[in-house]
Length: 124
Image (cartoon, rainbow, N blue to C red; front, top):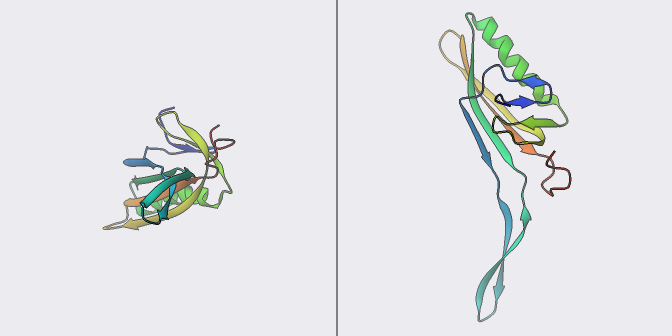
């Protein structure tokens, strides 16, 4: 797989930037007269943040392409396929866009969050 895909929606062009991040839940415990000790409680869900542009010969064409990307935001969860070959169940947690000039180029950001970080059903 070389293109970003969410469910059946295949991004026409990969976003300019695709950033995958993950972290662990860590709790700090104070031990009297000893200081602090940290405990790893487990993984948080992975987050994929994408930044890109849609472009067309007219503002209406660019808006139509952006609308197709925005339509995936209503999904209750789909498999997210990354260009690296990774895939996992995710939902859209954030979507935004901005346009300048004549509207033929529209910048967007879309963020996906993994639905299950337990490893039981999160990796497909």
